[in-house]
Image (cartoon, rainbow, N blue to C red; front, side):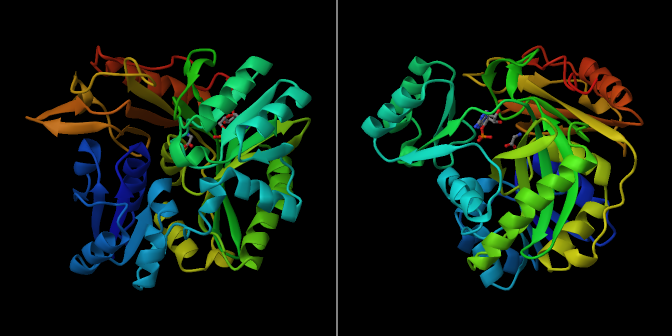
Amino acid sequence: MNILILGGGGREHALAWAVKQNPKCDRLIVAPGNAGIAAIAETASLDIMDGAQVVSFCEENAIDFVIVGPEAPLAAGVADATRAAGLLTFGPSAAAARLEASKAFTKEICDACGAPTAGYARFTEAAAARAYVQAQGAPLVIKADGLAAGKGVIMGMTLEEALAGIDEIFGGAFGDAGAEVVIEEFMTGEEASFFILSDGENALPIGTAQDHKRVGDGDTGPNTGGMGAYSPAPVLTDAIQAQAMAEIVLPTIREMARRGTPFSGVLYAGLMIENGRARLIEYNCRFGDPECQVLMMRLGAQALDLLLACAEGRLDSARVNWADDHALTVVMAAAGYPGAYAKGSVIRGLEALPEDSRRMVFHAGTTARDGQIAATGGRVLNVTARGDSLRAAHDAAYAMVDAVDWPEGFCRRDIGWRAL
Ligand code: AMP
Ligand code: GLY
């Protein structure tokens, strides 16, 4: 079959790498892609936020299956447009993607289905929000309701920080995404990510991972999109996964279906685990980046069969064949990220690195220029390895990191520390 993947980050490189290994895949196009993706698939320049443009591209190229990577086109209704045109599609409708696009909506769903999550209050004006914070006291978490590229969450560890967060969001720092503010109870515990495919009715857990959100070693410095990940996450024991399925995921899927907006795609549940029990932090409606890189490294070619079963509503008979192994990815980012960083520096040494079913450098912000690979983004490479133990995966990934010649880049040296 002919497959189109929308996106151009490390997540989409990993998806393309796994899909490409499946004999069902005849032709693979990724839009817009990046330099790493261009080495394994065709790339196309296409406005992936424009449903009509995506549909005509699919018709011109006889595409049989569309996989939507990032949240922005999902929230914009691109999966609705492709489905309406009769194209088999992996990714939720805009109505179902509200589970990521509106934090207030997710809280409403949790209330309706009884899913455990942080206590909260919603506000549309600063004065009432400030009064609430004064009355509650710190710590509190202040969130812009809408999509803010992962930046709309402010930790109010003190009253001053919480109040400043309210002013920042209502002051327009996140545009329309900040028209409503959700203020949450500060939860303690250990965070982990749980990935579940849903076809609207059935649910199939496909793996766990742990991200590293802070930019610096020892979880210090500002939040980023994620500086590294590993799978599985031992904190998500079988018992906690079962509790999260029974109390959070399945009730959510049933509630979305009951409302006439079934969720079809991958539900990425950000969980806080404390005292042997998970509570929901937030949902995302797509694979995590960089968590997808470790999941794909472990799933390999069967990923395509699973995504097809999801899109075709056949998850009740789908199974995941897990290898009893571990994968770890280290993000290499441009110096300065997540703040301002320079673009255009040249990365050397990649061609000498092994690329096989156990070791891959997935590209994020890269471009090919005069036969060289140049950095064009904040997060640039995902150096990923698999091993029989997490330690083996860790050592193999860092051996590759050390062979990359890129003086303008940096990475965390402690990915995996919680589990190691
Ligand atoms: P979110 O975008 O909602 O995942 O928030 C980003 C990060 O903020 C999460 O990964 C958590 O580390 C943290 N966070 C969000 N909500 C809470 C909460 N209610 N309590 C504690 N930490 C939170
Ligand atoms: N790595 C966090 C995310 O994809 O949202």
